[in-house]
Image (cartoon, rainbow, N blue to C red):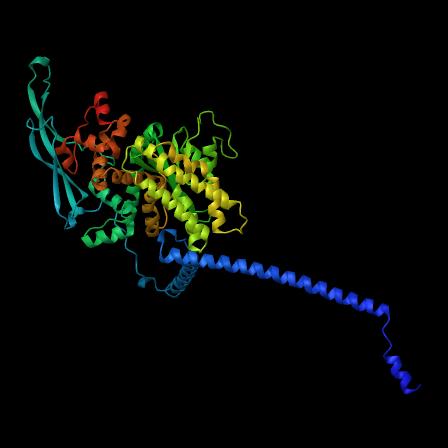
Length: 587
């Protein structure tokens, strides 16, 4: 074959079949590249959303840490690491003690014997505390019988400035008693009459705890230190040791539980009155840790979570209730029979109560009655827009501007009577509320990714009725901040004492929190109130415990004998119940 023929053969065009195969291969490559491009774009979009969400979280957490301390989240990672390290140290300590015991087991004579802990009532006379002497006399024998001495005992009391040793001196009397000495074989009328002395000691006054170590003043000081100031018992124990006397935390814990359970009758009486007469109840809840009892293996398990509910009844009472679980059943049992206004956040546990239906798994209760009317909280609504505004979202900024305008307009009406405030709200506040919800509806239909703005708009749409409820009556408030402020002592103090010993201890603590908070509400000194009520309660009729509530204590105290109340211990005279005219005049 010649060279020309070979060149011609090489330049011959390819067949149609080879071109089609090549084109198909290129199409497949194009489809594969297109699919990879779509996947890459989708991954990039997911990455952008994740980055935006992480950036929002970073901005929000930075804001919470450095600006709004109330929005901080609880972090338990450090606590878990500490618990693991503490358990390891305890295990190594036990192994070291066991090894040391094996080495020293042969020489029992060199073992150090443990000292037997002291038993019996502690001797307060050995302390250097100032002495307050209280002499108790018998009104029936005083001035008629001869005094021959005193029977003394000591209590640990407290006055502003420090502890006191209260010496209770009960007068001992020699009472002559006529006796007839019989003579054998003689009539009874002729038998001589002699006087035989009888020794009589003045009885102790009534007390919540018979022959207790602590006087009411010291009990009140211990309770106020913990449940008002948040000082744990171990710090009080150290403080008392520096003052020169010993009072262990176990004793204080027993007094706290016993006094809280006993004074719970006063809290229950106030609660019953609130459920009958309150116009609006405001409630909120917070979690606390409860220490469990010993397990079958005699080991301690982890703390479980309980809940404190606080209820504000108008400007009359504040009471706390402990519930083991934060559920609809617990909420329905707490507010059973109440049909007035109830202000709370939009938590799902209140849905069954406001809907008037029984909780899931519970049969209908024929005594439940009509459900309460839900009142929303504009502060909770504002919080969602605040979080969106911190993340630089325009929806959050606009929502904050509109809600702040509603608060400012209503704040200007705070000093008006309820009827006048309702009329002014119709004129000044309702147009702002209508404009806000119209804006929410317009923005909610705009498609946008999930985030803080979407959550804030969704909350406002779901709570339209409850958030408008404050316009029905001038006595209703826009926000539920009072309940959250009432829970602040619990939230702050649980960082100091960490947990409650049991459900009973938590319920007793709830009663004490109730009385202390009610004292603050009515401008009473909680320490003086508790000390006086602990003294008065043993004498008070059970059907009149409501008179001992902080709301009525100023009036009740005015009817008591001031001289009797001024003494650390002693008898208390109970005044007669108030007449209907007096009750009407007080109300």
